[in-house]
Image: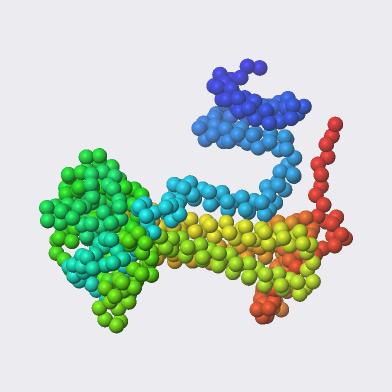
Length: 507
C-alpha cells in the first residue's frame, strides 16, 4: 500500500532513523527488529493523518519516539542487565575515581594555559647571574619610609658598599590609569634610574630607563607586557605614545618582556623618583635591590647592609637572595601539600588501627593496594587544589579588575588551605565507605535499628559490597571518639547472594 502523500516525507525520515539504528542490532535479529519498529511507526502516522491530529506537536512526539530506537537497538546488541550493572557499578570503582580526578586536573591545566603561574615558579629567573641579586626589605624595621630619603640612601649605599656593585631602590603605589573612556585601578612603582640596568633586563619594545632620564625624561614611563597586551591591544607603535597615569600624561619609552618577574607582579607602570609628588610610603611597599660582587657571599652582604640600613636598635633590615625569594611561594605550597598528604595518611592509619583491633585481616597485597589508592587519590585531589588556587585567583582578578591585585597571593594561599582540608576530608570519608578488598564504593545502603528506642533515630546504617566481600556498619551516634565504623568480612556462605545472573544465549 502506498503511503498517504501527506505523510510520505515523514515516513522517509523515520525510515532513515530506523535504518541507522538497526545497524546496532545483531544481524540475525535486524530484519525482525526493523519490521516491528516500522510497522508501529507506519500505523501511528496513518492514524494521525486520518484522524486529523497530525500537527507540529504530534510530529515532534513521533520524532522523539523514533530517536528512542537507538537505545533500544543498543540493548539488543548488548545485554540489558549487564549494561545496567556496569553503569551502576563502574562509577563506584577505584579506577573510575582516580580517572575522574586525573581528568579534572588535566582539564584545569589545559584551561589555564598549562598553569603559567606554577611554571614560572620553576623557570630560571630572567636575569643574568641571578644568584648575585638580593632584596633589601625594610618592612620589619619601620611603619613608613620617606621616599626621597630612600632613593638618596640607596645612592649612598652604592658608593660606600664593598660587597655590592650596584644598588637601586623601589617604592610601589596604587595608581589610576585611563585609556580613552575606560579607567582602571592598577599599581605603579617608582624605581631608581639604574634599576633595570642592575637587573640586566632588556626591553621587548623600545628601551628601559637610563641614569640620564631622571633629568631629561622625567615624564617617561615603562609598562608591563600584560598592560601592553590587555589594555593596549599589543599596539606595535606604543613607543612614544602617551598614557594617563593619575591624570598626568606619561610618555611610553618601553615595554618589559613577558618573562620579566619581580617581587610584586601586580605593577603595570614603572616611573622615576622625580615623577609627581614624593610621599611617605608604607615600609612593606618599599625596599632596595642590589647586585653583589662576583665573589661576595650573601652573609657578607647581609652584615654590611644591615649596618647601612639600621637607624636604631629596633630596626632589623633583611637581605634575601632573589633565587630563594622566587622559590619561596612554590616551596610553601609544596610543603603544605606534602603535609596534608602525610596528615591524611596518619588519620587514615588511625582508622586502620581501629580496624585491626577488630581483627580485620588483610593480606600484604590488599594492604598495599588500599594505601596506594588512598595516597594517589589524596595526592591528585591536592594537586587539583594546588593548580586551582594558584591559577584561577589571578585570572579572576584580571577579569574583574583588569589587573593582578596584591591580595591575590594571600587569597590564593587561603583558598588552597581551605580546599585542601575539604579534599582531605572527602578523601577520608570516601576511603571509609569503600570495600577493604576490592576498593569498590559500597552500596545497598540500609538503615538498621528501631528509631523509637534511640531518640527517634536509627541505630546505624549498613552498606554492603556488591561482590560480597563484606558489610560496613556506620553508627548514627558515636558514644566516644574511639568508636569506629564496624567492618564485617562475609564468608563463603554468603557468596550465592551476590552471584550475578549470566544472560542465557539461545541458538
